[in-house]
Image (cartoon, rainbow, N blue to C red; front, side, top):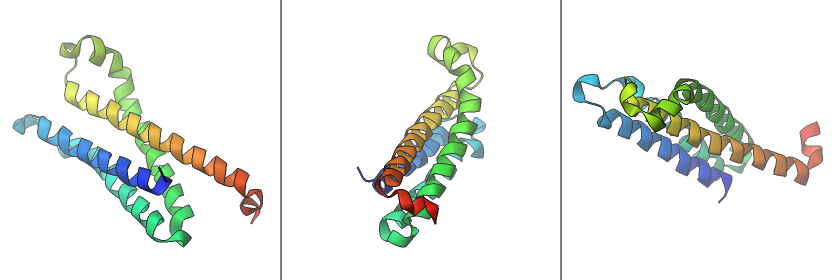
Length: 134
């Protein structure tokens, strides 16, 4: 799958993840923080659309996507990964198991996107080594 399309798809997955996390929470416990995956996913999807529509903007769009994926991975991973063991073994011990699940899913989606971006950058660099010198 072309990188721009993958970015759009994974951006929409993050938007859906944010919406699901928001609506899965009890009405009294709903918080805008549940929408954080959507706040990352929407710009990722838009940058993917831009990369697909304008060849001249592709390089900058893809670098923006990679930056957002890195920030999302760091933020969600720092929150969710320390609680992953408890999520898998003893959900009852967690104060907000749904939030922990969503944080780990966001980290996973961002990791997949970041790895795909880096692989694309490496391939592009190998295909045209002189392009990085300008």
